[in-house]
Image (cartoon, rainbow, N blue to C red; front, side):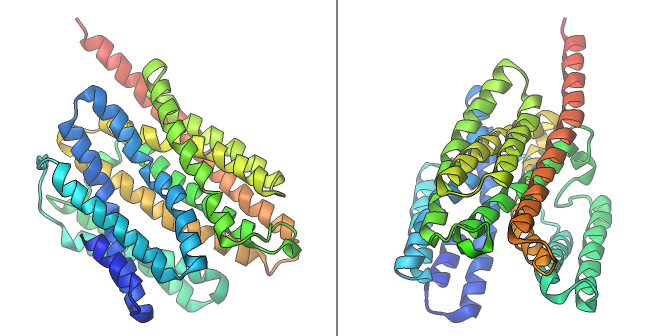
Length: 387
């Protein structure tokens, strides 16, 4: 309901302040994904829950690929308010549908909210994101930039400190840093950063003028349509991920998804001179995205006690969405920051895409090393317990 009201507020002629307030209310929608995951876990049989969790886990990227073309078309042909109005209609319909079909939730943990931790984590991440956004404009020597970084880092560290001492923290950090699940959380953060960094790069590159050496000079609607193959192949990737999990090992789905994404970004680094080629890159990236994000809920549940899976899934989703925010900002920050160097437009673009590829290499290598070991330990433990 709050998300719907936020979209309605943004659709109204309330000026910049109303738009910011509406976007703030829409940001609360991040909580809907972990709630949906918890509902699927609690109300479906184990056989059906695995597939449902995998599908729900990729709905964020699928939704972006489906909604961006429509929103771009509405903003270009009508107004930005019309795009928000369409979003309000969709979420209002979803609200009515959810009220009719979703069962009552079952509580698996404490319902107390650690407000001090929430304020510290929110203010810290907001400060760091703001610092990343203004860094190209302020420049490295700027005092305000380093004050933002210091405040953000200090707030996050203080959140860690108070969370470890609190009886009902937002996130049980001791469980979240366990040998198996910490790799999944790390993968969620890095995949979120790298995934949305690529989406932002595609939107920028397709609309940039051809005079830059790498832009395609296409309108916003074409840029939005290029996210459609990403959404479609994310769904296909999620199904393939579950096939790998059922017939080989779930542990391999995350590094395999990262590896597919590496191939997509390397291809994009050197081949980006037409809309068709970029569409192929987005389709390949969608498969990698589906592989990676679909595997995360199953790995989190496998490595977390049943009573804490709701909290663990929520933390993983939080890291992913933080990654989304960082990734979209990082793309513009790197491109803008390198714009003042002697590098040409093509070199700047390729370097930025190379940063994206490097993030996926780190994710794939880390998850292969850590999650595979944890999975092997789990298999050995089950073998020992078997009669």
